[in-house]
Image 1 (cartoon, one colour):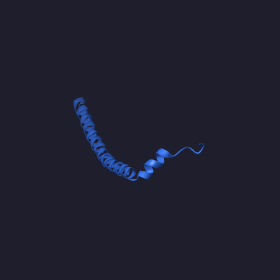
Image 2 (spheres, helix red, strand yellow):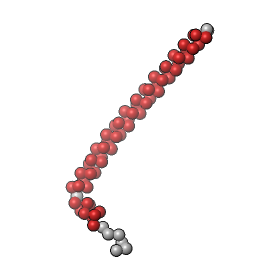
Image 3 (cartoon, rainbow, N blue to C red):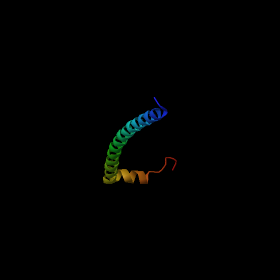
Length: 68
């Protein structure tokens, strides 16, 4: 095998490895996007629940520390 063939083979191997890494990263990003969407919905739900329950907002604002 000539030096050129060896270099070409090495480049092909690197290219294949990069393709695999890109696929792995794409899978991770897709999973993180789903998780982010779920967490965003949960935060919106919890925010709406707190706003809809005035006693929770009032209790947090009116509580005085025990040493008063």
